[in-house]
Length: 226
Image (cartoon, rainbow, N blue to C red):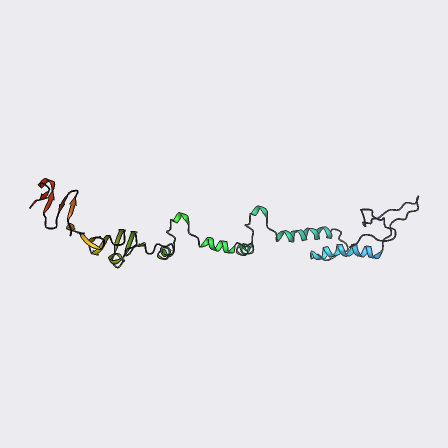
């Protein structure tokens, strides 16, 4: 397309370099603007190109084809646009959209994330989780619980046990219904279905009872009963 550029065009009518048309003025001898084939060819092809681009065949007797063509072209463009009030519901391929805006990895990570409301119930491999956060040697629910230092010796986890404070004092499940009591790696007693059994003296403040049943107390003049 181009603006009229015949010798009789009105120069700069619409601004610098923007020629226009004039009806002329017989009183001043100014001629009306002449048209040439270049100008009409330009107008014709601009209009016809729009009509044909809309898929409408040119028809000599119809004078609304340009209007129809513009409307059809706009409609075609609207079909490929997202409606603002749909808030993304009309996105045809949402996974591809997320990938294109760089959110694919974020979505994948979110899908693998733990839900806070599950309180750890959705951890897929709980033993591995315990190992990864450094609790494998501190907490082994099937064999050993260490409160304080990690258990060693009889508290190494080979049998169910709980060591408390240091590595060699606590409780060991030595048999069915039997709970052994250890202090500094020495077995000092045990509990079973018959009650508490002590393998060392029992002390009550300043009094004590030995394993043979003898009692030392102030009641006996700070002496032994037997």
